[in-house]
Structures are given as structure tokens and as C-alpha cells.
Length: 268
Image (tube, helix red, strand yellow):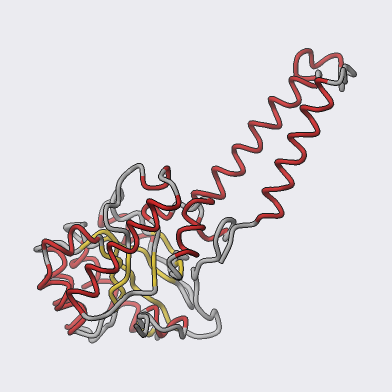
């Protein structure tokens, strides 16, 4: 897994050529009516804005696979979908959610934060004992996580893995970057730790949208990986409504291991 080096090199090379041309006296105006924007300096400034915007979009949308290849969606020919939950475990919400999943015999995937797992080890054990997948969502989940060096990011990932293995005896292979943000540092860290990046194809925005809006607008497709959070106080109630509804439509809920046919845990 590696980010798109060819495209990155393209931007670097073109930027260098523009700077080289300018400082060598490239003074031809592209359009005199454009004023500053018609000059090489103006063009370079505009180009930099466009370039920055492309990189920003590429970082935000993990589905673009720009920096790292992620598992975002299953087979569109099979009526299978996967529920994934980020940012837990929570001492109350996660337990209520597990009850709902048991009620409908649904297996899900939990991307847990290491420092929370340390506090709620029994819940992490319950998740695994009930047949759900436990995956890595970083140890710290800091707001500055994407801004750290590759070495620090890798250390953070490994720390979370160690905690999960000490609790469950299983070392996760799946990793979802905090906020779903990717960049060259995160890509390098994922490669260094031999993790498999997992994104999503359906984002519910359940942390900012009301239960009513989520239920009203919910529309899934075959192979969808649905992103929820087991820090949302309404998540158990939401799942208690959508699971039977989608099952009645013929959808089968599976964990991401089965959806992608990839082992969720390392052998060592």
C-alpha cells in the first residue's frame, strides 16, 4: 500500500518548472486583461491554490485511495453490508449496542481507540467473545494525529495493537485512520506496521446529524461499509430500527473480514 507517487511527483515537477521559468525572466503575460493573474507569478499562485486543494481533498476522502489503498466497499454483486463503529469502547453505549446486535444476530466491526480500551478491557473482551471484529483506530486519536511524523504515527498504531492483543490475544490487521484522513506520513506508517487500511462507502455523519435525519436519509447499496460511532448515545436505537428494516430488504450483515475475505488478525 503506497500513496500515488507519480501524481505527487507531477505536482512537484510542475511547481519547480514554474518557479524556474519565473526566476529566469519568463515575463510573458497569459492575458493582459487579467492583470496580476495573467502574470507568471499570478499563475503560480493560482496553481498553488489548486494544488493545495487537490491534496486537501485527497487527504479528506479516504475512498479516493490517493495516498494509500483502503478497503472501502465490498462486492457490489452481493447483497451484503458491513456495520462499522468508531471511537469506542464506551462504558454504556457500546454495551447497549452489543445487546441490539445480539438481538438480530448481526456481527459488526469495532474500530477502537487504544486508550479507551485500556479503561474498558471487559467490554473489549465482550466484543470479541460475541464474535465481532476488533480493529485499530489508533491509541490516542489526537486531533493532531495526521500532522505527526510517520515514526510517531507508527508507534501510536503499534501501541494500540499491543493493548488489544494483551486484552484479547489477537493482534489486529485492520486500521482506520482517525477522521479517515490520509497523507504520506500515515501511508508510510501503515506500510511500516503492515496494517490494512479500511475506509467506508457510506458515511452517516451520526455524530452531527439527528437520529431522525439519519433514518430518513439512510439508503445503502450492495457491499456498503457503513460508518457509525459507538459514542453516539442514539446509536443502539438507530440500529434497532435499521437492522430489521434492511434485513427485510434482503441485506445480510457481515463483518469486514467476511465482506473483504481478508483475515482480521495477524498470525503472530
